[in-house]
Image (cartoon, rainbow, N blue to C red; front, side):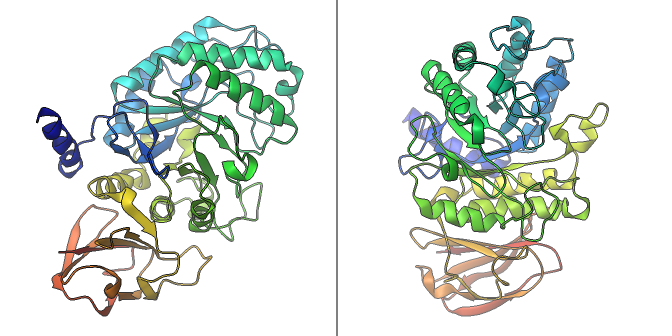
Length: 436
């Protein structure tokens, strides 16, 4: 009886603006479509990208950063362990010699340990890139080619060291690669991944490929890859180093249909506050809603806080897109979002979704039992909806404002039929259909 009440209370927590306590480590669900904790409670991956957190912030600042993001309903921070020649706020480098990964500075990793412990107290997952390859000569696969200058024995030594060093932290997962396909570094990445997995088998791993590629585009049937990461911007976006981009829902649809035996997330996309007008709050909301309604187990939000700008990172945390994503999290976590199936063929939105493969497409998902459905509409339009696909004699229809978290009732007693709905204003909206 006590466990039943605990489960009931955990399910109610999102309705009251609270985040359920996660029992780490997270793992794949039984159907391998999403994440669950050790109590089999679904875990909606809602990440922030604080890539430079470990060396740009002190222990106190990192704790404050984590708590502020938690208040915005983020539950994962994606970060890097170290990049070449980085020095943390205490003047410490990870390696005395970048060409020799065995020349470890234990004090540097002590700081990482303390930040991880602080995150675990706050029930925050930390997804760590151990050796970021980099897209633009900025990582371990860049101009210095430090991965290649280190022997495979050195890389294996480092992997086993950090696996052992951080194995006690149940809130850690690993991101291999980093903004690039492995290329000539393939064997180095595999040695590193296997070494970490050997020492910390309970900590999940993924691979961060180049934009437009997913982890499973690069790695298939490898025993160390636990979940996949997709990465893209949108068609017409020409600011990335790879200028041929698909839209988020396109790559998510493709990954969902692969049935690769693992969950996937949108690991990176357009950052709020970057790339001019494209990096706005609307775009980051689009990406989050598109990802989950297209089958992803979650997404990652980005802002200039990836580099933790001195004196500015607290103000950047207040960006409107970041604040609005709390409503994304609250809406989904109050429901069985993990039962949603992408409506690839527009059986729900039979007209008005907008042209496919554009940055303005309305994406829908329907629960597997056909008892409820969600549609995200990026801009004002009239949508023609076929409610006959839902199983129920009466249907409640509501607008949900993804910017404020407020609902607007359309009908509490709608019969299943084909109807048209027009957005309340020029902004993005969510349509929620629930059968009685």
